[in-house]
Amino acid sequence: EVQLVESGGGLVQAGGSLRLSCAASGVTSDDYVIGWFRQAPGKEREGVSCISRGDGMTFYADSVKGRFTISSDNAKNTVYLQMNMLKPEDTAVYYCAANNPDLGFSPGQILPFCSDYGMNYSGEGTLVTVSS
Image (cartoon, rainbow, N blue to C red; front, side, top):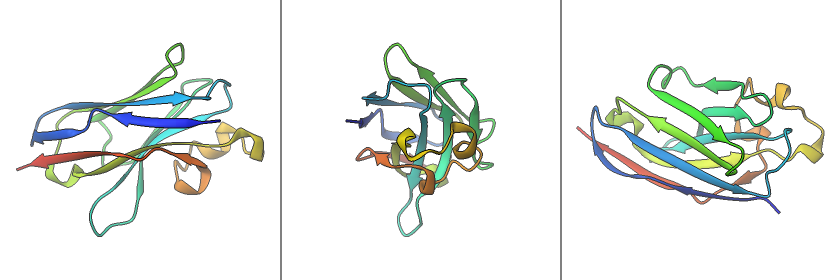
């Protein structure tokens, strides 16, 4: 069974940094894509960044390119999101999510979209608040 637990959220001033962690138990094969999604108040959930566990390929939303970095430590089954140069508009609940490889979609089909539609498991989220 896949379980995802996020940590690392908090309050930070604009321009600061945070590192989020996603402990992903049950994610053991190279067919998984793990991503970070966020939902701000009154907005839909959006894909921030995704990584293919097998080959390390990544996707970033345009709004975070150059500021956020996703990485995976497969030995620890943990995915990180390093967030630098944070802006007030980055304020949101951040969720970790993963696909279900048994449904037949390859990481190459899921990663380019980094969308909720490709994900089947999600954590409960961690709140990131960026003050101006």
